[in-house]
Length: 535
Image 1 (spheres, helix red, strand yellow):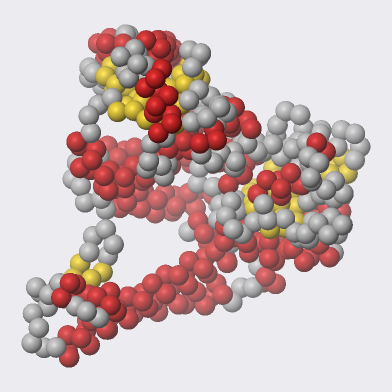
Image 2: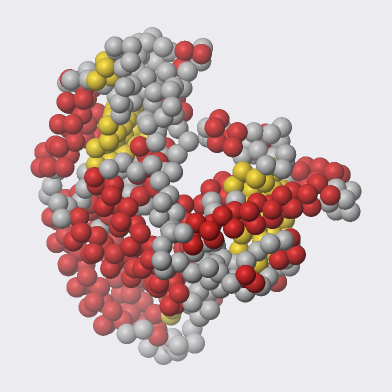
């Protein structure tokens, strides 16, 4: 549904991939059935892959990835008939989508009108210069590539400006520009610097040609955070991201301090005139998919089914409310007047990753003791050279300084505190090395984003940092500095917890004050689950 809303091209690609998967599965089933008919004396119930020498036949013996099933145990004739029905229905959709080319794409035509109007009737910057710059955001790389391919010749030849594509992957490119043999851009930061030369201070980069600029940028959400692109004053959401925060973050690329423009404009392509009907339909699909993803772990007790059902329902209601508001106004990230904050809502991003990780590492997690820690380099510190942080903006690097991220768990029953702490009974806190609490438990999204940035995909310890940590702590015998930081973290939790309780109490007549015993007040109220040292 989201890909269909984004572009007919993305939808066609999805249909094509699904049909290909069905055809591969049909072929696998037919090969197995043929092998069965040619070997009637074999006991296929007990036959294993190791008993087969033919590699193609091995592939056809089982289906599934994490959970595998022997084809011999399945009703293959019934399955083949169902697959054929699915393929027939999907092929109709695929043919319909494929028949809509660039010339017949009404949504693309509307985008071309907006771009043409922006380039031919540009706004003026504060110093009176014409501003032709526009960013077009989409949630899918397939849509971004489709738009770039459809627009690049028209933009370059008829509008006489340069256009670029940024997807965060190998697809990055721009129209050839700048004289003196300077060819088309493919490097992420080079493209953004040439799109927003003033905010990116291109004039101070001696190796960067200064002649021309990129005026039209097609981008995915790989640049929705941490980029200063305020040379531009016009942003188009070609599709609406499911997460309202992403839409606000997209707009935040141009709505920034230091802009050279008097005003900035946001244009949204909404999926339907009657947004409420679309939302109701989308909610049913998304709620079903979320439950399927969680249930597919095959673990009975990963999450309480009823609790997650209510959680999904609450999140969807909150999301809908924000999307409907975004239709008529531009929200600010600081607009946190609701009892549930925008930052709490975005924890949806991590839920499926977590359930999959639990499934893949359950034994390791069960055997792990409390208090495990890791040491990682700070992107802004003297140890940053130990890993590759080149893709990070300076602002992001500066944000993650030396310090510690603590994960604590409340010892006593915290029932009734869920409205105060979104991760109850767990508390995440990021404390800088100077004792300043940069993020407290009310900002779990930022802390989890940091964690993912610093740790995701890392399987080996930073041995140099481990040695440094051992030297500074006398092999763990002198933990005074870290104990002090832990005390700062707990103090911040207690202070913020009290403020949130009071805010919740004053938010309406139905507010309920948590029981005094369930509230946190001192270090002994917690146990340390894990901590991340940033050096």
